[in-house]
Image (cartoon, rainbow, N blue to C red; front, side):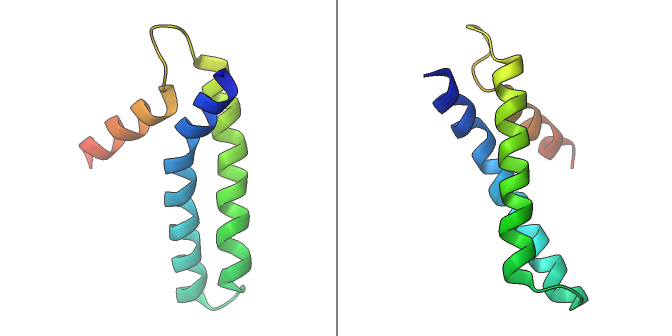
Length: 75
């Protein structure tokens, strides 16, 4: 159950990174965007899931999403 919670925690960040990487690859036209976007999203999903599993406690269920939300409120 902790793995599924960590996966759900990392998914919004991974989607955001995949969209941003696809846009950046489209603008730069140096790499194929349909290759860069999903690979960047998959890498962030794996790293985010690992971080979420590491810092997840009973009181802190979604640590990566909470940090992402806090960073977006500063922007």
